[in-house]
Image (tube, rainbow, N blue to C red; front, side, top):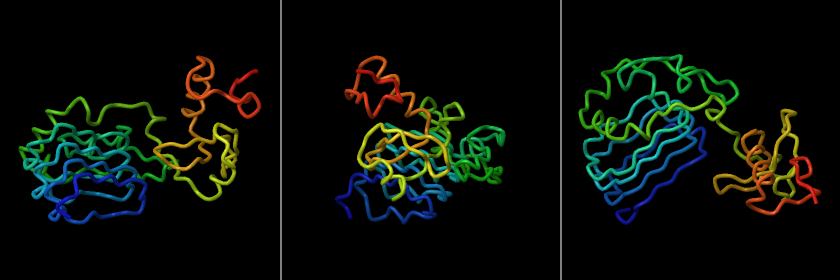
Length: 221
């Protein structure tokens, strides 16, 4: 597919391998997110025009191939739990770092130390990590490291197309009907979404609140 310029792959928690990039020479942007089993990426040898590489919520990612071919790269981001941030791939293994810690809530196993040479011995990869230091492996509070559940038929139906309604999660917890990452409206138990909507209501910003549906969030007539 020589015409392909953008790849965005997300919410495939069981995907363990990506195909070769040899057939997409004009690829310019790659975003990968919520890939819980992926441990490495295919070679960048054939995608020298790549400008943006964004990786998030990939807790088992242990290493990255040689980045020397990516001379046009202008955006490189690593965020949320990604074990190569702390498993020794960058030089020091620190399994107490929250990017490497076990997280049963999100079905993330504890990381192990990388046994290879830092950056696989690739100077181009080391240079890319140094150049984009401000956008990779930045420390976050532990609640932002939780991998949220994907919408299911049950969590979608309980919201009945009512945004910001109060809902009860399958685990018994209280949630909010919310749509995120361009997904369908679903029940989420993330307190950050609840606090965000409460803040919008308090500041009278965003979508006008419904005093019946959102009374639980502080909306009043």
